[in-house]
Image (cartoon, rainbow, N blue to C red; front, side, top):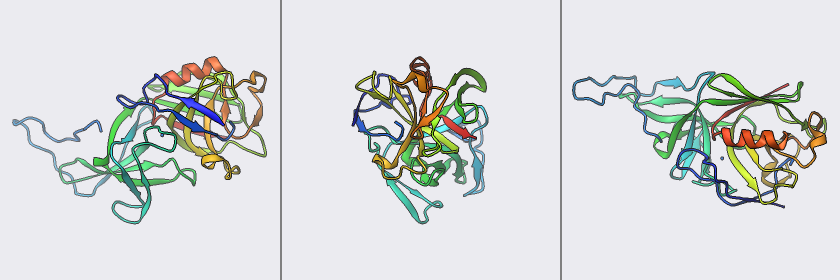
Length: 260
């Protein structure tokens, strides 16, 4: 069992990581006005109540941090999917990645369409905007399995590229679109996770019996020879110096794309 300790790095502004105990596979509202007038000399815009619109671009995305217990629904107010607390199973703030929003007649978001950190991979749902705090993120991560390489972008510009170890043929790294939902620091930086792990919202497609369902992370390693090979249980390993840079630069909610 790996014991994780609190990180000194912020998850989002005002959101801290907590002490957690985790066995991982391979090894988470800034009030925004949308056209609403803030001056008495302007007129508030109007929207069609219930209108939906996308959030984010290739250069930016949005994270939603739970500020009070919330339920994710298949559609706004319809069949519930799951209840989420302020903290996840590791004691870390529960974070979603925002895909879109449904607005009210004053153009304020009433519901947010979010990616969920649960099985099946790629699961989405709707949460009440009032239950979360949102913040824009300007980073993204691309994992290319054929190249065995991790690339990190900020504001659309490549700022870090590294060779990586990926899942073995028997325990593959899952393809898809995910997001960073937690960052964890092991108590032993010389262990199999190196100095830290950037947890993402993906799960192993085969290790369903592992603790917490086999979560996937980008982490360091005590086996530097493995970098560049397909030898992990599904996680993505990078050199420890790269992990430190990635950990410090990657806020929760950062989109992660894993492609073949």
